[in-house]
Amino acid sequence: MKISTFRIFVFASALLLAPATVTAQDHDAGMAAYGRGDYATAAREFQALANSGDAYAQSRLGAMYYRGQGVPQDKSEAARLYRLAAEKGFADAQVLLGFLYYRGEGVSQDKSEAVRLLRLAADQGSDIAQTSLGEIYEVGDGVSQDKLEAARLYRLAAEQGNAEAQYKLGVMYTSGDGMPPDLSEAVRLFRLAAEQGFAKAQYGLAVSYATGSGVPADMSEALRWTRLAAEQGLADAQHRLGVLYIGGEEVSADPSEAARYFRLAADQGHAEAQYFLGLQYDSGHGVPIDPSEAVRLLSLAADQGLADAQYRLGVIYVLGQGVPRNESEGVKLFRLAADQGHAEAQYDLGFRYDHGDGLPKDPSEAFRLYRLAAEQGLSDAQFGLAVMYDLGEGVPKNTSEAVRLYRLAAEQGHAKAQYNLGVMYNTGEGVPKNLVRAHLWANVAAANGHEEARGFRDWLEQKMDTVQISDAEHKGLKCMTSGYKECD
Image (cartoon, rainbow, N blue to C red):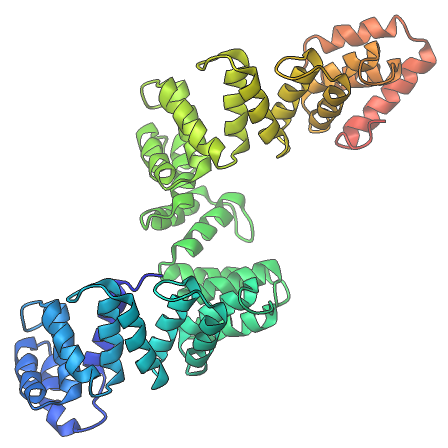
């Protein structure tokens, strides 16, 4: 959990602009000066009141020292003034001093002291303190993690109308983190916060409508809330709109509009938006082709650890597209992506170890990487692993396992796997010999462009009678029209 400088500025601003609840007449001159931007006069007015022990003035003057308004910026002085007011039990000062202790601004960092001060303010009903303390308990930063206590504090703040607390409690109900999941309650809380204009809640509500979680699915309503969040600058929502415009989902496909939204999110550091915009510059889809800009954006996303970006950037370096060819850099990027479970990167590295292409030949490592990618359903990896089992390279020969893997890849339309499966049925290796099925798979492979499959099929027909050939052709057609689901 991070208490940002932005949050401190916002809360300090709210304090400076809020009307005093006591001795209002004494604060009028300072507030009027602050309101018209005459910070030097406001500081003098608050200083006189602060010197007399007025907690409100001490807090307001502390906020001006924190921001450097009308006085030199001095966070240590801000902390001193907040402390004076906090010791009088002024909740806003306890919150602000707690923030400074949490971040170590103007005081030595002391998260335990921060928690103590926030607890004092929370117990007085400060929704800001309750929300901030809830975050601290949720992540266990400075205290033992306690999701139940986090939820309790969020609920107290949410019941006061704190939009951030409503959103955070909604997230907890969505995930069932620290409480039984309750998607309907999550939607209720998201809506309360969204209607106050809280962008994250608006997007949370949009996701609920898009997925039908806790509310009937309604894509038009999902789009409406996504737009509202995007208009407030929420990067996740901007990225989502970009995806919708690329795919033409719920909106007319518009790659230029997609690029606009991706750019808004990318400029905020959104890794997936950087990746998608990089792909657009790479392909010229919705923007002019610009290899340098593509590499820049993909590099930004890759540096954030996005595996898709690491893999695509690796391909660019290996092929020298828009950058000088650098195979070692490409392989390094493949490895980063593979270590995150990226199937294509695992396969690419496996292929290189299998064939000694840019890496030392290492059948054991090739087998390990092929298997990782094959288990994710990547047909190229299933084929590569099948060949290793078929030939007994890097693994004990196992033709039955080879057939199983060829079949998995063949059912995804992999022409080489379809051809090899036909060969296995012809020879009876790993599977009972069956000329009809051999012909079926040879025919399917030929239809998918395998150069040797046509000749192999014609050769098989020389060993088959007309009934077998007719049966094989019928089954081959059924296999293809079913999307390889009915191939027996």
